[in-house]
Structure formats: C-alpha cells, structure tokens
Length: 155
Figure 1 (cartoon, rainbow, N blue to C red):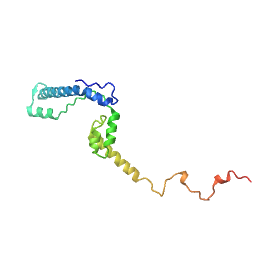
Figure 2: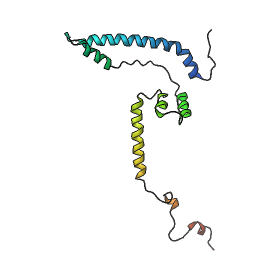
Figure 3: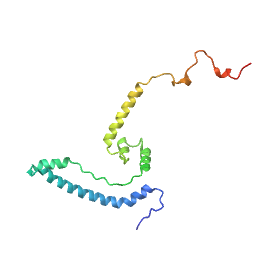
Figure 4: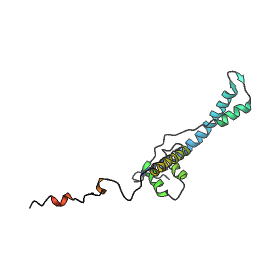
C-alpha cells in the first residue's frame, strides 16, 4: 500500500514520510562506512611510514577519532521554529536547541547564550536608573511657559 501526499499542505511532514525509508537505508550505509573508515584508520595509525606501532595506541587513536556523515536533507525551518516556540518553557534549552537543524553544536550554542546573557546583565546593571523614561518629551519646562497656548492668540 502506497501513501500519496501530493496535495498535502504540510509539505515538511509529507517529505519526511517519503524520505524515511531512504534515511533508514542511509543510516545503515553510514554505520558500514564508519566501520570501514575505522579499519582503514587503524591500519594507517598502526603502520605509519612502514613502522609498526603498538596496536593499543592505534586502537586508542581510532576511538578518539570522530567520524560523522551529514546527508544533504532539506529542512522545514518554519516547522522547526514553531516546535521550539510551542515547547519553550516546557522542555530544557538543550532540548529546544536539538530541534533546530541550524545549530551544529549544542554545548557551543549554550556557551554563547550564557555569554550573551552575562553581557546583557552587565549592560543593564550599568544603565542609569531614574523615576521614569528619559528623553526630551519627558523633560519639564523650568519656567512654566507653554508655547502651544500662545500660538493662536494675537489680540
């Protein structure tokens, strides 16, 4: 049975449903490719420049190497932002950031947010405090003259 999403207004959802089998196959290929790259790296690390090194050190170097495959999949950023907006205050900030495809590193983004909050706190802590808003429209006239009343009276 094939589902057809031709006239669906939720294009992001229909696209996800259409691509789900391909994404599952890609995940399997990623795992196989990751194992092959790890084996290749092990050989390179173990026999660098024709010299045999210890297998333990090569194995440790392979474990310390991160292999990441990133497929080129389109994202519905409007839907992502709506999800984040709806979940704001319900889940943690880490979880909210995980829903955004544009955020590459959640810990780095958290550090940037904390740095920005600290800068805002120092900025507003040094702001002058007063009884009300400051500006020319809120300044009082020291002489009590009001020019708006005198404009129409020439008698």
